[in-house]
Image 1 (cartoon, helix red, strand yellow):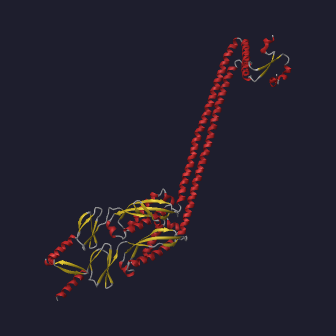
Image 2: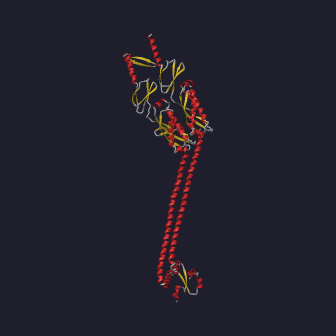
Image 3: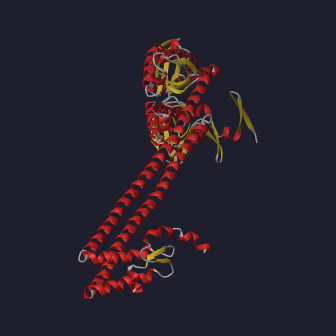
Length: 323
Length: 281
């Protein structure tokens, strides 16, 4: 097919003779149609279309197939407005579940001039696409620098113990707040969705000392628990012992009383008999008692009047075996 | 003739095109007429000027620009050395002044660097290290920002924000901090352990005390009860025996003999004792 070569600047285009032979007007017509078709564009579901006419902001369009007057009259930019972007401070995700710490970023001074190792994740998204596109350069860098500055400023407000334990949530909130203030000041059109303090730990140079504090705390609790255990062991036992003493004494009291009552009852019965026949009863009682006592024991019966020689008998038991 | 006409037309088209230009949302433009600034346009949109060789449009960024200042070592009021890493956000607010003084962004950045560094040095030099690290950091940086903005104004530049990204200590100071932190923790650990010891002793001692008290109270109560028993018994005996004390004495004596005299006892009895009354007869 015959063609004619046309040189425009550095490029060489071959135009079919047929096209040329169609004449100037149809060619221009086709060119205009092609140019007009260049204005078709689609906006993704997560995007918005920001249309500029002669460089000036003109309109925002939603997702779907759209049309703008082609370049150079109108241009379109399609930022992802629903996408939540993420910035990592102090570490980088290098693979699935693999992280690399960046000490230069993560080590920071606390308010009481100690050093902590803190890692932060910032999540943000575009709130105002117009501000986001036209107001500042380097979104990623700006977010990173502002996040880092915020975190360090906030950590600087707190002391190390707060940063390591109770104050984490507060630090997170304050960082988010400060970061948003900075971003608003720069009119970035960015909203901070979340700030997550990943891990705040003592620097590795001193981590053992910190761990020892934790175990000392454990030791303290253990010692207290042991003492409580001792108490829980000893006091009930003592109470038991006390109860035993009291019960025993009560038993003694009752037995003492009952015995007395018993003795008295017996005595009363005997007295009753005794009053009937005093001398006889007395004699009987005496003899009965002797009967009870005397069998089985050594007895020496000495004649009357030998009372003075009773001393001679004192050694009787000692010489008994010699007899 | 025909060729000349064609050239004329092309020139006309090019000339006309060079009179039309657009300004983006992110730009601002200075129109130079033979190198002489004649107009500043900050509004984006379609604009016109005289054709190319006569008027030229020079555009500048209108957005917030960044500058990461390299870390510097700065002395605080208490002569402590700090490594300060800060960044600057700035804007070209007067493109004409900017064009006349610094012309390009890289040159502008070196100016900003000089100014911010000297302001920072001056300001931080009037504060103690603890202030720089903690709460006052924001106030200090606001002052630095304000002072820097004033100093950069003649260049058509507005410093919007100077912010401390990092404040670190030089290596050897850092080590001394670590040593201090370590000592502090050791102290805390010791404190916890001694506190544990103390608490434990307290609890044990109070336990022992309580035990003693419990037992003493119990002893007291027990003795009272025993005494009560004794007293009652005595009372019972007394009431019964007082009716016939003579017989009681006799009776009780017999009872006592039964107990006193056991198998080990050797009894010497005179033959005239009551027992042998009959024997003697």
